[in-house]
Length: 406
Image 1 (cartoon, rainbow, N blue to C red):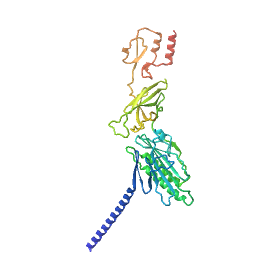
Image 2: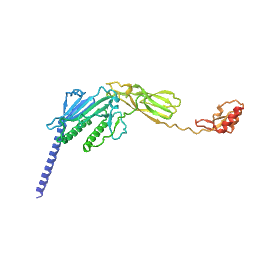
Image 3: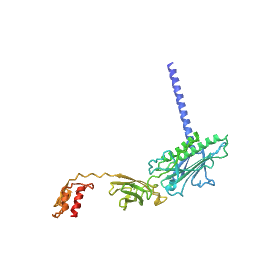
Image 4: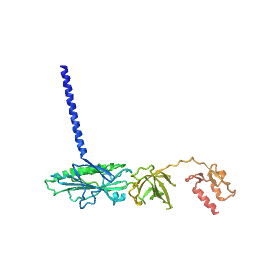
């Protein structure tokens, strides 16, 4: 009896193990099938992947497209018998946009919070261009990616193949939104060596949330577009300002930084010219500041240091002098307060107020003048400039005027 119960328990355990093994094999089978359908592509520095069951690669460009599909990447949805949407992705490098301002500075992006967060040098910057769909019911998005000094553009569209009717509207909207989100997922999958894509993924998720919310509420107001503000100051812009001093970025004097595509033994450096303007005298002076050094402004007790500079150097292109942007940090350095001075009277007639111990170094003639008598009742103490002197009271001023008249 006991042996038969043990045998039944062992048999039940073996069946459970076989079921678990079978489930694991099925999961691996489905996963391998998914991975088998993924196709990897590379456009310049960008590496991405897509599912061949959903999208197919095109090599012929359409007549109105500016992209060459043989050098860039053109994808379109795999047509099904009941398909009502023509979805398309065109990804390519914009060789005609050679500066960061051309790539990003003249475009807008949709954000809920207009305050910009700190951007690091290794971040891929991204913005969107407002695109008007051919059809009011269609969706079109254009994203630009700034990778170092190279600009890439991704055009995404989901447009109706035929006229939308009341019978096909529901299915069209469902397929349009689904395919658009899948194309955005392809952009979010972009991997770039030595660069962070967190801002790109965040932007893609923001657009997908916008599509989802618009489907739930067609009357939802879109957030106000704001200008994409690149970090740092351009040539001619102010990098530091106080009540007495203005410092502007005068340009780059030396750029020996290591190119982004190369691994260098030394990082190199960037040397910039700073124009220092004294507001009181309106005088101008020049100051050189390197990335591996700091500089102190005279009469300001302020230290300046370069935090970052854009764009990065590249072996493929030269940087236009007006394209540079620098982020310069200013830090107030508190001078060590000297020990309090003790002031004493000096001179043959007591007409001088000097620091204690310095009186023996002062030589005066032993002659008497009427104004010397005025100093006998004046206060000899440390003045606002940190030096010893007689405090200019009304009594002292009046006494000196009468003595000089006589």
